[in-house]
Length: 497
Image (cartoon, rainbow, N blue to C red; front, top):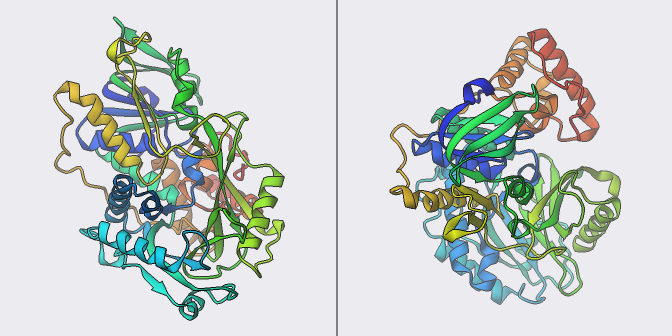
């Protein structure tokens, strides 16, 4: 149970985490499983920014072989396996198909070598994983075999196809919530709608965080030996608020990333890796998603505010045109885009779109830094897939000076996922036994720190994914909660925002 009790949360901890995206949640989980007293503060809702807007694919790192970055490849394979191992009901294998036309590195000979390396270097990828989630070896396909996977493939110049396997989260929101439930079952605490305002200091050392409950306005004091700043796009802002006066921009230089959900049946049961005919065109992934298509990821420069992120209409229309060029015969219209998932990722340089390849873990106050904030660490991550690994590395780095990071405690395994409604489809709200539906909606609100209606409809479930149905779904849920005697703050906030 994720208990949002601000009064109970006050006290002493080993570590306080600021930021409730996937990196903050992973840090809370790693700390709690090792018996550390840990608390997380998130000023909005859990996983509500970039973590919510991913393409849902757990990439094993095939693309890193292009630059022979074997270390990053192995890390990605290991962490993909972690998700498959611990969340078998929320992850499934995803076949990925790239039609090959002999352009650039996307040639049959090159891809055959890449697939062999991918399989050889990830030969332990299925160890300990449920057999239903085992990822087969990749294969090279002939032009005819490619067409059996993707009947609408452009046959002109087609030389074959490369088929490999990754994993996909069937519900990324539930993965985050199950990680939170797991952390809380191990003794961690997680508070949404509590903003970290300032550090508590003593003799030049961090001694905790002062926060403000956004809902009640109550002051919250959390004492902690270490504070980990996992503010995502706001990591530099948080560091500045905490008194770091230099190099905050190096923590996170924002770039825009967005994906689109398209109201069109999938063109293949595989995720398609396609690119336009022009030399140097980006590779887009178009994957089947609950009877529709999810396509991305577009990367672009970003110079606006960190909040309220999203592409402009020209960028969305440009991506629709790029998809039509990469998939001849698609003829997608802008009106068929039912949702845009947008967030910010760290760029290599200010105003650029190229992403950083490595996370940033900065231990402030070490080596006599002028800020002197011993006990504060700032973390800026790059990928959803490798968040847990970065969390572990961060804690090991900090606890190296404290006798070493404790091992996982006995009994720190994941709690069983609560059987309940279909959280991916709003149809489950309108059919079946009304009393069961009402009780389950009320239980999610009660046990998963739901404050606003949009928390429930967008970040505990996927019920308001389609903006055209959002109002009807919101009305149904509000009615069920009224019948159950429940209440939510800001009940009438629009769930599609």
